[in-house]
Length: 328
Ligand code: HEM
Ligand SMILES: *[C@@H]1O[C@H](CO)[C@@H](O)[C@H](O)[C@H]1NC(C)=O
Image 1: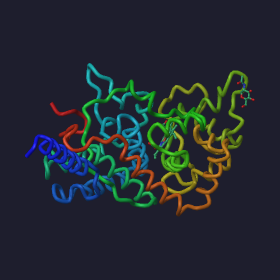
Image 2: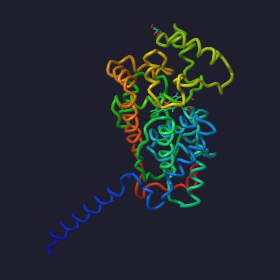
Image 3: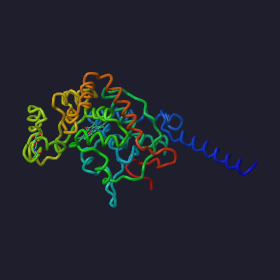
Image 4: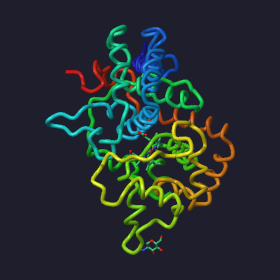
């Protein structure tokens, strides 16, 4: 063999190996079929049990998956507890005290470690739990490609550059979601996550009392709804635990009520109501409101896409033993 042939052979080998490595590193539906057959079943059981006690936890888990994926990819970084030397994502003001459902992930993880130790990642458990939450609350179920690995870094300081605040306008939201690979249409679709759950008063009270330097109440908010919200969220209340339902007509059902609210000027956040201020997004809002079936399937597809953001696969990262702490 000439040295040219050897080099050619070597390059071919590298290409084949890297190709098969890439295939191996893709997320796969049924990833745990051989290694931990009951993984998805057990997560679903834990989600079901939690929802019997508190239906609102479904919203918490859907939001938690979103907050995981938008910060450092879907690597379970949102689950990691702070330490004396590190303030983790979950203790950013965007997550603490509002994010909920951590105990569901913990209990699913404990059961999975007992039957297949070190196999199922926390990032996958969260992706399954979010899917189950959508499905149990009336959205479409969908297959979750799995094989995510858990990250070892979680920094509260990374939240502001990655998670959109409720004050964002449509252009800011479009840019934020484009940074994560989403179209504007997908941004509108995913915003429909606000069809379930609740919000703390602090997340929108600026719209009731301190909109800008000249106007107290946001004129884009339906005045009757604003009056109700003011009763539920009194100005200057020191009670930071006060919450109101999102999509008050059906706050535990994954339906298109969110879009109907917006059309009625009853979007809770500026980031919801702003979808009516742009021709393209307003059209999507109307279409989603009128086509519940289509929105449910677009939402399922967008959740799958969200679950692929910057995932760790193959030998990257680790399989955490406990979702709250990186392995020692
Ligand atoms: C478009 C930009 C978004 C903004 C600005 C935003 C902002 C917020 C805020 C401020 C809250 C209330 C937190 C609180 O005070 O308790 C909230 C709740 C929630 N968000 Fe979003 N969000 C966005 C997108 C999403 C997406 C893409 C999803 C999921 C697909 C989602 C799912 C939820 C859910 C389910 C809740 C209720 C949580 C609970 O009841 O515990 N959000 N969001
Ligand atoms: C405050 O908001 C109102 C209503 O949107 C608007 O008309 C006004 O120009 C704003 N004022 C300032 C100072 O931004």
